[in-house]
Every structure is written in C-alpha cells, then in structure tokens.
Amino acid sequence: MTTSLSTALTALDAFCQQNKEATPLTFHRGVEREALRVNKLNGRISHQPHPQKLGSALTHNAITTDYSESLMEFITGVHPNVEGVMSELTTIHHFVNHTLAEQGECLWPASMPCYLENNEDVPIADYGSSNVGKLKRVYREGLSNRYGRIMQCIAGMHYNFSFDEDFWDFLQTYKTGSANPEARQVFKSDSYFALIRNFRRNSWLLSYLFGASPAVDKSFFQKGTDKLNMLGENTYYGQHATSLRMSDLGYQNNAQADLFVCYNKVSTYIDTLKQALKTPYPKYQQIGLKTDGVYNQLNTNILQIENEYYSDIRPKRVTQSGEHPSTALQSRGVEYIEVRIMDIDPFSPIGMSKNTLYFIDVFLVFCMLDGDHELREEECHALRELQQEIATHGRDENYLFDFGKGDVLIKDQGLHVLEKLQTVARFLSQHTGNEHYVNAIEEKVQAFKTPAALPSNKIVSLAEQASGYKEAMLALAKDQQQEWLNTPLSKEEETLFANQAKESFEKQHAIEAADTLDFDTYLTEYLIPQ
Image: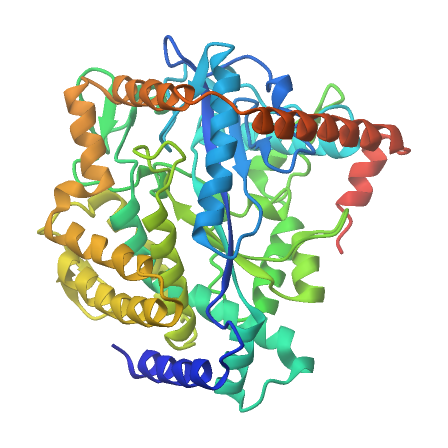
C-alpha cells in the first residue's frame, strides 16, 4: 500500500471521528445500460420502431435509444446507495421486457452484438422532426459514414459517480489546510482529474475482472479477420481475450489516434476537444457535408461533437439547453465522472450485479485517494498499449505484462492492487456498517484464484456448449425474459410508465412546436465555438 493512500485513509478516519454528524462516505451514483432489441425467434436485430408504450426516445428520462433505433438505453436517476440504482434499473427492465414480449422481441444480453447482415441492417435512431431531434439523427448518420453502423451496435454500461460535499470538506482540508468554499470548485475539478489519472493507471484490472466480450458473431467482421480464432462456423473469439469491446477490434477510430488526453489539466482536456472540433480531417472531407442536399455528417472535422471522442472515463458536468459539454466544464467545473469501460454482464438480467457496483465504488475511492501524480506522455502511450494487451491477452495466465516496473504475471499484479482495494473496502465497511464493500473485493480476489469464474471464461464456455456465440446469447436472452414475465406487472408500474410515456410525448411535441429556425441555420448556430 502506498504511503499516500495510507495517510489519506488515516486522515479521513480522523475526519469521520471528529464530524459525527457529517456523512463524508456518502457517494452519488447512477447507471446507463445499453441493450439491443432483437427478434425473439431468430436473434436478428429488430427493425420495428421504438415501442410507443416506452414513450419518446428524445425526452423520456429513463428509457431512450443510443445509436440505433434498436439499441435501447436505460438511465437511472442519481442515488445515494447501490440498492437504489439496482431497484430502479430492475423496475425499468421489468416493464420493458413485458412491452417487448408483446411484439415478439427480447433484449440481447451481451456487449458484442447479434448477427448483423450488413450496415443497412442497422436502423439509425429517429428522434422526430424538431431541430434537436434532427441534429441527433445527422450526428448518427455521420457516425455511420465515418465508422460504419455495425461498430455502433456495441453495448456497454456507464457508471456515473460523485462524492458528497462532506467528503470535499475533508479532502480540501487534508490537501490544502482549509476548506475554502471560494476555491472549492477548482479544487474539485483538479481532484477529479487526479482520480481519472489513477483510473487510467489501474483500469486494466476492470477489463480483466469484468470483461465479458471475448467472442462475437462472425458477421461483426464483414471482411473477416485473422486476429481471432474460430469457434464453430459462425463465431470469432480471442483465445485469451477479456473484452473485444475495449480492444482495437471493437471501437476503431484512426482519426482520434493522436487525441491522447492524459488529464493533467482541465484546460488541456478542454482545449484538445475544442481543437478537434475545428480541425478538418481529410477522410471526412472526402465524405462531404451533404449529398443532394441531405446531410452526411454535422461537419468534416475530427469530431462532429464532443461526445464523439471515445474514452474509458470522462469528466462530466450537466449541461444547460444548447450548451456544449466542454463549455459547461470550463465555466462550472467537473461535477461527476462517467466510467465507460464496463462491459454488459450477460449473466445478470439487468446487465450488472450489485457486487460490481460496490467494487467500482471502492475502486473510485482508491483512485481519488492514491496520490495525484501527473501522467507523462510516454506513460499515456504505455497505458493504452497495456489496456489493449489486457483486452486481448488477459486470460493468458503465463503472459507477462509491463505495468510500469518490468514484466510480471497478471495474477501477481492483480492481487497486489486488490490488496490496496481491500484496505479501502475495510475502511468503507467499518465506517458505513455495510459489508458489501468488503464482500465485493473478496469475490474478485477469489476470481484470481479460480479464473474459470471470470465472465470472459464463462462466455467462451457457454459459446462452446451452444455451438456458437449467437446461439448462446439468444438462449440466455430468452431465459432472462421469461424470468421477467413470470412476475406480472403491477398496476403501479403500468400507471408509472404510462404517465412517463405521455409526458415524454408532450415534451417532444412542445419542442417541435417551439422551433422557429430552419435546420441549416440551427446547425450553423449550434456549431459556433463557445
């Protein structure tokens, strides 16, 4: 355990003892879970529109779509405990599964998609006739023209996390000597960036322990690939892969190859994104902005909008209407962080387990307290290479990885980091009375001792038993939906979601009625640098 972590925990313990009325160990979290809608009979991607009973994808608070009309996204509110997140996500899934069953569909349970015949097999999401709806649509057309639609069907779980104000009282006093309210937001932003740097140094552990995408249907690679092995006739898999989703075989983006943001300064991060938003990219210029008056993309620059920049973790701030994310960060600082590295857990009917969320909580507290050293450029590149090696070779118990101090086995390094996490977990459990923190870490200590329990190993075994990835995931999808259907919807659930759907359509119609600009003018004004 590093001295900085030990010292920080000792100081936090003293703060807890002196401030009995405060709650410095309250964290705020929410989840976004993506999942494809598929035909229940054949496992093919749905071509039906977003179900009316689920409301407007543009304005619904909890149920929307991501890239595709068939790629659903479920969003929880912010909760002070893991159980609140799990409960809300369970309610959403219960209603959605009953709704999809009515039209012969179910949710694909994994990150890597089902069989996709070609790019045109993937319907782009439709958000209505408003200018903001059209902007979302054109942005997705741009993603299609730049990277192809198949890649955009990869699903993940995003974890949004922030610390309570009492924690900031402690940390600011611990680091600066006083809890100065006037300097609080700058301190918060700098601290979140320190967390992000430590996250990037250690996020390989999440790929190893929670990676659940070692295999994919053959159709994902329209031209085939020689980088993976065949399992049966229609499945590619990495012999030692943990997460193809997080490898270069998953999200591929050559245009962003030079946009390495190492998060040493908030200003550098913002400047890098803003520069990418106004820097033309030759390949995208060849695509053109319009064809026969129809938009191919929002612009021909490296990034159409900031969200196009892919990262396994992002600093976030809730934006105001029409405000760009970087402008919100620049003017009001970092509010929370979004962890984007997590694969969907195919063995959970809601895509994640309670212990997974508790593990992430411990991991993020560790990353916040374990020093704030800046990242050198060479370390940034080394960490990216390490992440790729873990994604493709993580299950090879004899493979030597360089974690920054020479080649070691992943088990040795993993248990070393988990020992630090155990220290944090014991501290959290001691001061909250919640043993789930300790249990979540101990579960993963055992995973290093019995690797067969890793999700990536279980997926390969399941695919082998079912004679293919597609067959295994469809069987899992049907079983999970049947479990949901075994419990009828309550009147309260039906009323809740009916009201949410009605309100969302009313909001969409109000937005459409309020538009006064033509789309060309709206887009021009939206893309003006802020």
